[in-house]
Image (cartoon, rainbow, N blue to C red):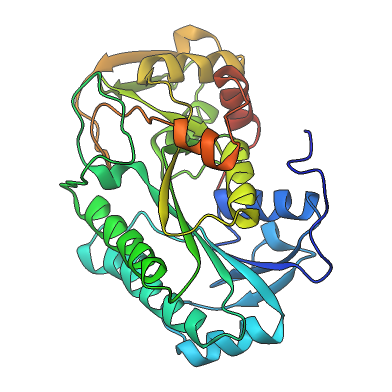
Length: 314
């Protein structure tokens, strides 16, 4: 994969990656290191994904801001990437992961000498349901209608408000659904991979698939967008990150089956409602990412599904 920039970051350019053990965090950390950055991996618990990296076991939502600021200062952190967030099932869990954590982080950054730059990864679902075939542009007024989307939006708004008031230098990336290497089992595609791996002639897989079309981005493409955002001077903006294409859920599943090499007869598909954090239609307008960050998605959907199959997540 080609380098993202012509020059190397200055010596001592350390970036703290919050949520470093997850699908997105581990890929962001690897891409930052490829580009010459030093990484401080931050997560609640150590995991094999951060083996060999400088690691801090911290619950960012619980630690006092002064303690977090001291940690960032001690390790000479120049930028922070927040890719935390959860698939919580209760309002309390989601508020803790998406709002309380951001409040604590922003307070810590204000106390940190040099005020490290913040790249906060939000969600396309923050905009709320959008009618087909509309593309979601950054000027759309957010109207989320689920707890997940509302709490994610509030976290992003806190970051943007802090940047607009000059308290921090920060950029929000609103990412579409993420897949590719280490896709979490908590996602639809991750759960499909798990079920296909357990398939056998005596145990065929019956899937209920929503009649929906959604934008998916490869985690490797998302990680490149994050690294470009770290190096960018852009602040107080929200930028959409996606493929800019809406794929049918059936198409994605069939690409996964093709990647698996399993006989197609091991899978039966029926239409039906499926639980989702967002609506049945998502299509990101990604022109601003190209204009402001010089970013565009590079990995074909079939290659993404192959990587999703070959490198399952936890």
